[in-house]
Length: 97
Image (tube, helix red, strand yellow):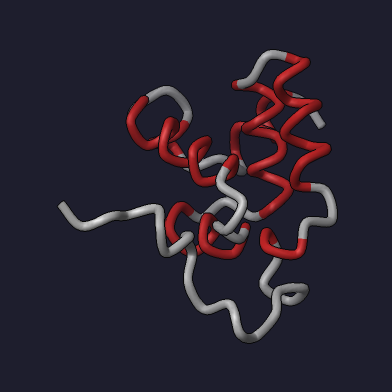
């Protein structure tokens, strides 16, 4: 796949237009409980596009760590996830002030 084909599958606002959106996609990809389907629904990036984006944006060692972390992880895929998990974050993540 050449650079043009790779960029064509990534929405324009993430191709250098908005660093805040790019940062949010990367953050969601790193989160254990955020499934790829949530990223696709919010940003229009399927799992393969997220992988390509992460490969391009992270250092090679960081990409390998991330890839090993999410590969086969049940919480990153809605079909593999237990039906009892309906939230996208840990209850202790957002504590009341």
